[in-house]
Amino acid sequence: MEADQPCRSAVVDLGSNSVRLVVFEGRSRNPLPIFNEKAVLRLGRGLTETGKLNEEGVEMAKEVLSRFHAIARAMKADPFEILATAAVRDASNGPAFVQTLRESMPGVPIRILSGKEEADHSAIGVMCGIPGASGLVADVGGGSLELIHLTPQGRHDATTLPLGMIRLADRSGRDLDKAKNLADKDIGGVEWLPKVKGSTLYLVGGAFRALARLQIARTQYPLNIVHYYTMDVQEAREMTGWLQNSSRRSLERLPGAPRKRLDDTPFAAMVLRRLMKKVQPDKIVFCVDGLREGWYMLKVAPDILAQNPMDVVAREMCARFGRSNSLPYALMQWTDFLRPEETAEEKYLRHLACYLSDIGSHDHPEYRAEQTYWRILRVQSGGFDHPSRAWLALALAIRYAADQQAPFLATSRALLSEQDWKSAVVLGLALRLAYSLSGGAGRLLEGTSLEWEEDALVLILTSARVAVKGESVRRGLERLGQALGVATRFEIELVG
Image (cartoon, rainbow, N blue to C red; front, side):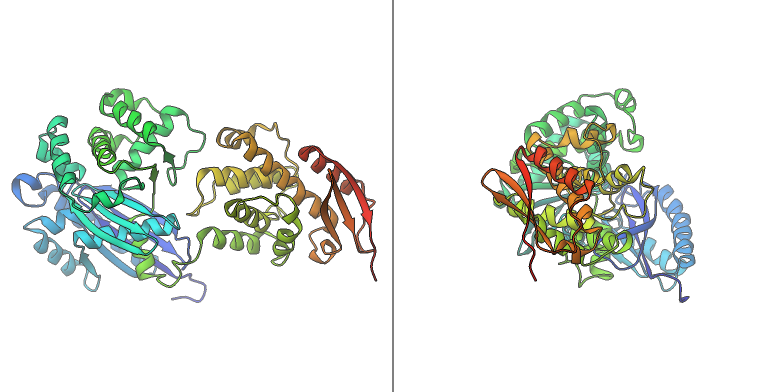
């Protein structure tokens, strides 16, 4: 590998419906895909009747995989591996197909995953994208539905069911009522499901992602990100009912409708509805990370899964775009005064905001606020749920003097409660004041503190180094006091 060539890895997900190549760059807690291409093969079409892979799909697969292999080699991806799932696993001609591939691509590892291995990879993918996830993972493909129980202690009770979208359509003759009976029977036979009753249901797989995309378009949801899109049970029931009763033509009219998935949509909605009836989850969370990210964590970065992806991306962005790696710690201490009653989650978001507070330092001053807002709101990283994205983006935009009425803040306005909006604004103003005081130098910030005295917010100065008479400092303190609804003043307590 050339000295300036970053390390890369690649995996092919050879499924019952489609085949996808993903090339990852680097070795990070947040997998970075730099190439992602899918081809629809429908290898599993007709498998229920014939017991064999679809011959047309087999021929297409040979061509597509040859191209994917060439791309992976040209990009110097190592490791490079092909993972075959339900269709190849269950077809009588699956082993012969794999042998043909091995002969055409000598040296390329090709693995036929068992149902439990497939479920386990998906669960690790969910752990990659949603740290601390606990509940039921449901990964739907073309040939199978994998269910696995995820807890803080590990992964348990993996089961694979013949409820993939192609197989279910074949088994039922595309009759939704027959498909419902089959789903109820298959899901009802999973003996361990009562253990996860009332827990969170995590949805993985292209057919489930299509449901989220359609719902996002239909409701004009303000953030077009499927990962961590969360619904309560009532909303999910209404959505599945709508999707089962909507015509393909009506769905096609929605902006960004996943056209290649629309024929599967009623079946995916029905399977979700049957799962919800059985499990009665507390909420439904969509996850874009699954089998491929699980492979990455197992094969490429097995020792860093325990890291928090939000911490990692905040520190990386601080190192890349900010001016100091030490100032965030000082800012964290300096802003402790704000909410003595803050929860652990609120404190953690404040911690992240301090690390992200200088990432606009190299942007054009006229666009720093907006550029920072979009950079945080749309950051390519797992772990951030949608309210957290909206809160952090707002806090950092205010830190860069965004007008609270600015149109680009509309997503945060829609996703945050009035209380959360205010807390983000207050933190943003506090960070803005801190930078006015210190110019980004932690040594100067050490000579100041903010404290509560009765009903007033007091800026205490303990160092002659601090330029306290600057108008920007005075205005910043006044704005912070106005946001908090309290009076403000200075106190000088020089020491030494």
